[in-house]
Length: 459
Image (cartoon, rainbow, N blue to C red; front, side, top):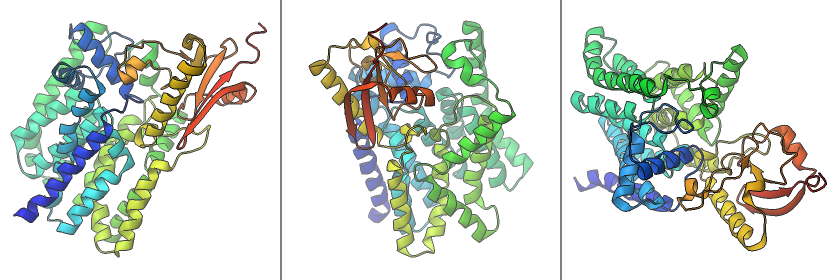
């Protein structure tokens, strides 16, 4: 019995260590929006549950409420926000281990699963952030476990939480429903009985969408500049570009090894068994759901698929020499450092190289205070550098630099460039080559350069 519990003890210890590592990491990438909304709720109250239009993407507010509660409990701080993620890190890894045990994976395979789980760059990085995509991963795994253990009431509760976290939770519901269909050997009656437990979550998300409409006048597509472009429908070429983006999500940051081994497993078995269907179903449903929209397709949208690919990967590696397992783990870990050069964009929120950005950014701010007399209102940059330190570090500093995405830089005296900024256009990058570098720092694979416009003072 003691040996049976050991893997849980190690898993809990790893989750705690990962959370402790993240405690002072600032909000980064799309979690900056989470910071902005949760601080708004903390400072202004919940009011009508709707955020100001410039922040409102239409998602249900449950995750934001949850983080805000931790501010009230522990104080408004990065520490409180990151501690709030620990229960979901624990839920994710423990649910994953219990699924391995349900399918009677050998003890060695269970430990391998534990190692691989946290070796996936996108997974460990998202758990180090205040990320509702990581929360969706944990909830999906716990829901799948409930299905396998026939815990229907608990499943219904988890599904409510899933749709309360994000609109993308609807895709999770669809994926879980289809998974049940195959787990029940395509028995329509049994499948329909399971779907009765999906009804409460569907009712709640329907109520939310209708309520949100009554308060804002829109369902899924807002007219606000910050969001309207992302909710638009693409043309045929856009569908092709989105297809390439999805394919890239299964190549980047070390994921290629999971993709290849999952395919090798299928070729070896020559049938769609449960291990293949577990990841293939959400892959197909998520991909179909993302294809029609202009919203950029991010690696983190497929966290669930990445983890579910571990089931066939573990089975495949179980019949191979240990060296193949070592190579697999090494490729995943090296995925943190597989960064494309400028001007190719990168999935910075799915690699721990983002910590290098934090160090470089802190160096810039320290040097800025010590050595420069440049008003930050006169510095242009792009996301995520344009966020205020209140948004990223929860400081009192609300100054934001000018976002030059899609704008001319001719009238801007300074531009802060970084390879982390995916939104610099090719023309802007070329233009900056003719500007003067007045400050430069590099940490790991991340660089920050402050350029001065040589033509500005002559105007």
